[in-house]
Length: 112
Length: 115
Image: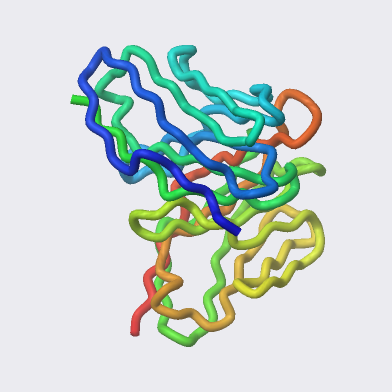
């Protein structure tokens, strides 16, 4: 198993800019989710993709968007970055809803 | 969303068993109980999950109360590598069929393991 890999590991952006974070799912996993983790807090669900369709979304504004590709890799896009978007962004993949998720190590985004 | 309640922190000694409690009094009949842990500077790691019966795997055991309103994660012999934040989570289905659910994390329990 290759696990879940995320890139980049760290990123610094300026307020108002746009950012794209990337995730390669574990082999055989058709579901991918994205989470935002602020310092000292538990991860918060952003959205989930299953077979290239978004099928669940948390309480995040539309400027957070995503894509899942036929090879089940995924992107998280954030437009009009705000200072509060500074966080660890985690990608997680799974085979099916009643299996555990495999998380990547995350991308640390800092907005200045 | 059904919520879970966990102690903020717990302490254990190396090679002793650890029982991490979780209360989920508003759990629904179809909610699975999941446990994840997060080591410093890493993403969460799946530990175990169950629905009604007690579950065992190579990492831990999950004991689920008969009324499903509480559960306990059991680490049989704690090691220093088990020091982490442990999250008890109820899986919530998404808004369509297929493979979909979201994990609603709380603040978890910070487990400290003393040598």
